[in-house]
Image (cartoon, rainbow, N blue to C red; front, top):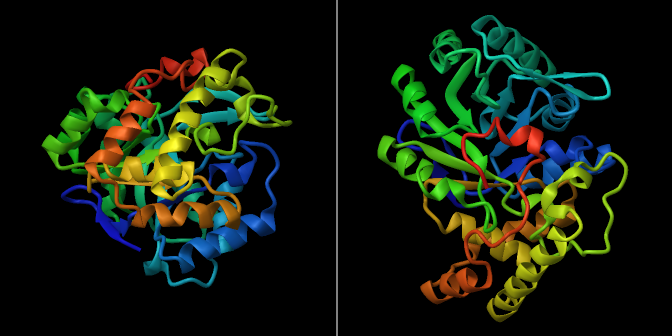
Length: 331
């Protein structure tokens, strides 16, 4: 497994990270034993970066990871944890909370659920519009100084917020959606990150499975699957988006790889300061993703990918309308 460094102040991590969201019901029921086995397989393959959030199924994902990581050398992996989204039973969305006292409260609960004495990268999941980012980051800095957190991260914010946060404490990385069909980050945010020496951890590199090569227009999202409300999976949009996938499939076939591998490798090829996160929830999907780290894309390959999936050609927003306003960048 190759190693990349998250920015000029962040940690060295595996060139591919593992995201835990799908293991906690975001895309329908997941098998707990298979999820634990997938985490174990990821660690054995050399993946060291594991991403979660305290609100993934209201703490379920942190407890699952605690089970999967029990007995492992704590220095052999890094935990990236998001916080700040408020949920209720159902679940229901209750807004955001970036107040300093809330930051410390969220952290205390995450440390307990994860069974650890520190979080490697701690980040607000979204910007709380009611709380200056300096206050939220200041609380994380206090926790870094106290040894409970190792690095400050951000998630889904724009350039102005990044600069303000970085002025309070060095930011290791920004976590944001980045894929062949979600490229808004390229216009302003990515240049800002590079100017400041901040890394990027890219989630949604397979667009929640849409560009994995495994989705079909006649496939319905099952019970509890958040893709049922995703604009890019809606009727009319999904058919168009899958034509892009079929064009990408032809490029992948010529390269001798799968569509998923090509899509992951494309994100990784955008810079050594970028680490793709894959949301594999089975060992089979993880095994497919792993070779992407060794896939060398030539200039001709990249040009072919660009022709197959030109920037801005996907249809539909990446989130339902109610959640788009909270993002630092659009699609």
